[in-house]
Length: 148
Picture (tube, helix red, strand yellow):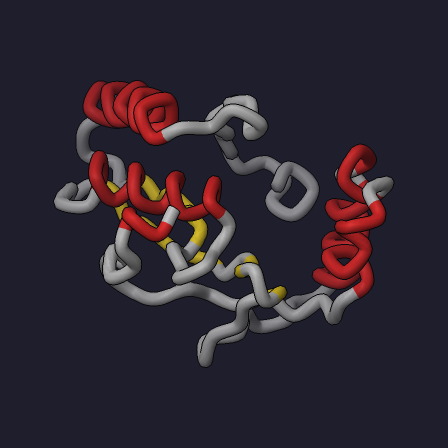
């Protein structure tokens, strides 16, 4: 994200995704909620994965927790992006429009995932087309949490 959006105050949850659970993510989002409350008046955009049936378990947990903590907040806009499911990469009817220099920046950003790029099971993530897709507008909680 720092490569794709230089100069923007991007924050990551900083959690170990090998042991991610609902309470850990919700606690991190509540901390962000408290910081947002301290800066009242500014609209904050939070990008979250689109929760999907048979989707990545960790991505779905992040989406559900964000909706739980921020879903009814007037000062937070949740924006969703597509990731992947057990069947592979997810798409939607809402592609992200290409912008100048975007392809070069995306390739640079992908190269930052050194540990992931070395895993044979992840080859598809680094060799597929570069198109990206937005998720749904509004809550994505139609995917039941029981599916995790």
